[in-house]
Image (cartoon, rainbow, N blue to C red; front, side):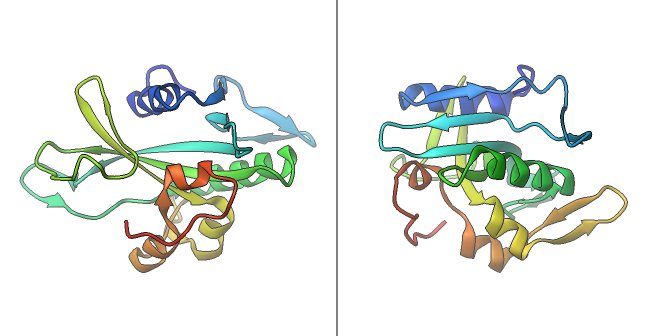
Amino acid sequence: MDRNNHYELAFEAYLQTRGLCYVAVDETRRALLDDQPIKSVDFLVFDRDGARLVVDVKGRRYPGGSADRPRRVWECWSFRDDIDGLSRWAELAGPEYRGLLVFAYLLHPSVELDTTTADLHLHRGQRYLYRAVEVGDYRNHMRTRSPRWQTVDLACADFHAVVRPLSQFLRRNSPEEVPF
């Protein structure tokens, strides 16, 4: 966890308000596995119902783009290294753990959402919306976004097929189908 990252601080506050047990991972040094560096995750999350999550938080703005040319797209890109690291950590943690990419969307004040929207969270006067994708589902659908920057993403249709409100992963059963 990066204490200078407002997305990760807001996510930690979200976990605290829900009374969840978690470990914020110190990202200042990369771990080694088989003499190879492995990208750190941000959180390990546990709930009373038995959910065990290995989480990498991805901060994004919605809408993205500039003020004069906003892009109303739910950005879901990541670095390939993040996907590889999250997959490895989830595998190392054991079969009862789920590796999740959590997209923390900082919402522009013009975005109107019902206050009952799942995982809409107010932190320090800002609204964040949390959506998650299991790392295996992401890997199965990912495509190269930029070879130079080693980034990947999902096509919009694929993203909408696999993304869920974060709270659905905090239940023991598989997430059910719900709209974004």
